[in-house]
Amino acid sequence: MKSLWNKPFGYKHVLDISIPLAVSMASTTIMQVTDRIFLGRYSIEAIGAALPAGILSFMFISFFMGVSSYVNVFIAQYTGAAKPEKVALSLWQGIYFALGSWLILGVLGFWLTPLLESGGHPPEVLELEIQYFRILMLGAGLPVLDTALSGFFAGRGLTRTVMVINMIGAAVNIPLDYALINGVWIFPEMGIRGAGIATISAMAVIVSIYIPLIFSRENEKVFKTRSNRSFNPRLFRRFIGYGLSNGVQFFLDIFAVTFFVYMVGRLGTVILAASNIVLSIDGVSFFPAYGISVGVSTLVGQAVGQSRPDYARRATKCALHITMIWMLFMGVIYLVFPEALLSLFRPGDITDLQFTEILDYGTHFLFFTAAYILFDGTALVYSGALKGAGDVVFVMKSVGLCCIAVMVVPCYLGVEVFPSGPYFLWGVFTLYVVVLCGAFYWRFHGGKWASMKVIE
Image 1 (cartoon, rainbow, N blue to C red):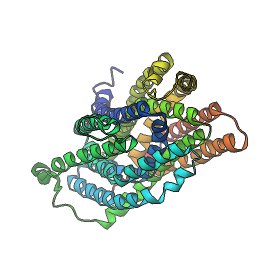
Image 2: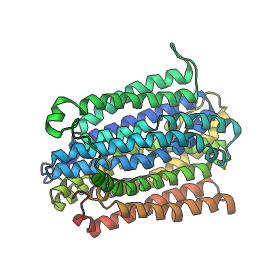
Image 3: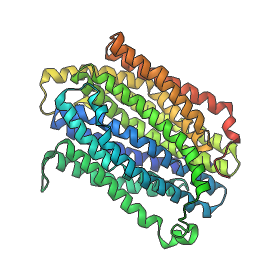
Image 4: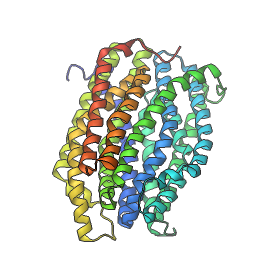
């Protein structure tokens, strides 16, 4: 570790790029977790509705975010290839895509509510799910646009800017979330609708900060961020070609989790609430690790742009070690303090007997989380490296195959055909993570990615 610390694309370089992204993701996680804590304390129906509706909306948003996020790889490879004039042009193709997706997602927010109804959740939960889902979908273009805009900084390795802006968004979201859910200060009590409005408001603040920074006079001089805004069909097609695979992969990954949540929801409100709480807690470990994965994509993209696959391997190795330390730490927290973590989400209108059941199930679910957490971190790092090089089609195919064969079919059989209970479903979820980890590990060490590029 000492010999790699100061080398290019070594530990220090990885930490400089990845820690701000991890903090950015952590701020997003804090927003989500506090959102769930406030809703959990508001009512058991609200916490039961928040994750299914939130994941369903994110499942559709994730496709467009996945496409938009590939701007980061294009900018990283153009930066590595020393072509600053292509950086702004790539950014604008992502902006055009994000604006078009906003209209599509807003319409889908009203067309897709039958999917919530098919979940079989209690009527009082379903009503809240629909309210939350529609609000999030109406503002869904904002996170897609945010993803494209952040690529201008993240792709060039300026991740501290991304971190500060996301922290500002969290600082806006958390107090506004509490106020709109519970009706304090000058705000009305809106429950789960208030949570959705607070989320969209925070995203609007983030986008409004990015715009003047990106289109400043200094960036116009270096990158032509204002004048180099033409729609470039050739570049746009190449961006969509790679971005679609990334979007489909992201969509399928979220779909797997969404399907899992809906199958768990068929087993009762208590089991659904316990699973939702545990998945919310798991976000504390997952999203910072995902930030490191985005950092790996950036560094591998820059290394590939420089035609230095050895640098890409070094960055991936260092990122894996850092991620393992983080995941191991969080796994120990889950095993040692399960009740304390679960109690943060205790609904205010629940009896001691009901919460005892949630604690019992939730504690066991956290044990499953601790079992797969290292595999999850490994999968994130290697998939990030593969996508940074342009090997995104393999990532998409692997997630698609595992989604159907390892997650969807076993979960459906375990609930609808051979009733097996919640522990079987959590076992399937764990297996899904382990299989993906093995696939990405094998592909990366096979080395085919080293000869790939997404730029001309």
